[in-house]
Image 1 (cartoon, one colour):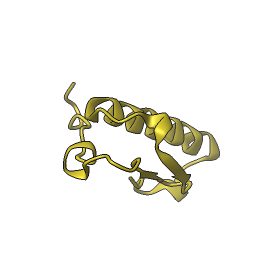
Image 2 (spheres, one colour):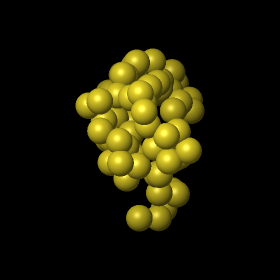
Image 3 (cartoon, rainbow, N blue to C red):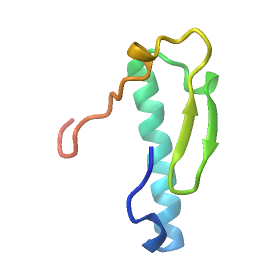
Image 4 (tube, one colour):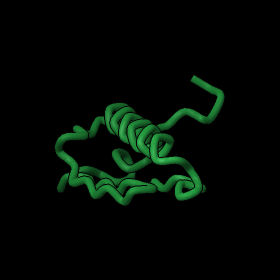
Length: 72
């Protein structure tokens, strides 16, 4: 995942974005049946690269499961 216009935000806003991104990925992993702690994570500042554990079917575990903006 990557955050749009990240570098134009204040330091405090960037930290909040990073926290929200981590929460969103944790939520998506939970909904996809993947343990967040079992994934290799690479913080990219304005994004996260999440590598699924071996044996996870990408067609099932890798499908985005985040709600659309404005929906719960």
